[in-house]
Image (cartoon, rainbow, N blue to C red; front, side, top):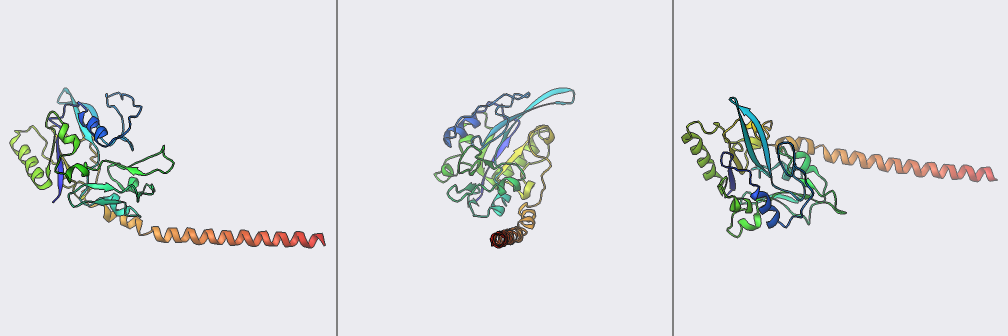
Length: 263
């Protein structure tokens, strides 16, 4: 069974309660932040801020419209991050949550490069850094609870449940909305499909969602690059051994020449 979340941007009031709940439940430290020109605060996610509310202001049909977008991990059905993790630290769980085993993570950042949504973040301030991101509150789900963000949302903008049911509900709202929503469920096909779905009252390019993401499964692309990794690593290793042998031989010859000159 794949769980997920349906985020209705027409209901989000930008209160940031989900940001606070995420921090609190996951015991994430506070960070020094600043308010952006559009009032987004914090302005970006980090290893210690997994959920943000991004404010976007635009003009639609002659009137100013402000949208609030909850941004975080999309929990892809076929995660690119999992496909490139060389130590198997990232796994998509049976319930749909994509998690990182921090006892295995080596902080190589391949997942950060592979993710089409720019989700995994690096612990730049740690001696032994790891990658961190939203886990869809996997520890809460296995206990029968909602993710902290969904449980705390006062306006009902974040709805947790089975993905198939949420997708049906999203399409129903669009069909019965009398033009309230654009006719698109974001996440149904993006990146091959995601567990987190969005519906929006304004065009998606007026939100903080990535509208330039492929609808194909991303691991198909990442593996083309990752297949080259063993050969690349092997080539570097051979080159390093060759340089070491050359340096050693050169040192021996120089020592021999100095010894001969002394005689």
